[in-house]
Length: 161
Image (cartoon, rainbow, N blue to C red; front, side):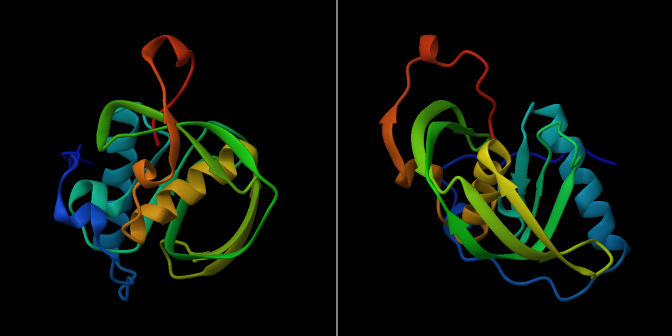
C-alpha cells in the first residue's frame, strides 16, 4: 500500500470526464488499496481517482458507518430524490468549505474490484459523499455547486470528501 499525492485545484485532470475502467485486475486492486490509504491519511471520507491524477471512473467512500468502505468502479446514478443542504469540503481544495444542496437519496449502480455489478441505495450524509465522488468522475467540482462559502467557525465536525 502507498499514500498517493493529492492533486490540488487547478489541475486539468480534476475537470475531465474520466474514462471507464475496462480491466479488473491486480493493478486495479492495488490502486483501490492505495486510494483507501491516501483517503485515511488525509482524513477524508471519500476519494476519486482524478484526485490522485488518474483519469478513470474509480471512487471510494467510507463515512464510518455499517457499509464500511464502498468501492465504486464505473458508477452511475440511477435515481435521486429529496433534498439536503449541508457543508462540503474536498481534499483537492484544502481549507475551503461551502454549503451545497444535493438530493437526500441516491441509488447507484457500480462494479466492485472483481468486476461484479452491484446496486446501492444511500441517504443523507452517505448519499452526499457518494454524489460528491461521482461528480469528480464527471469533472464536476463541488465549488460549482456551493451556494455560500463557510467560515472556519462554522465548520465544527465537517469532514472533507
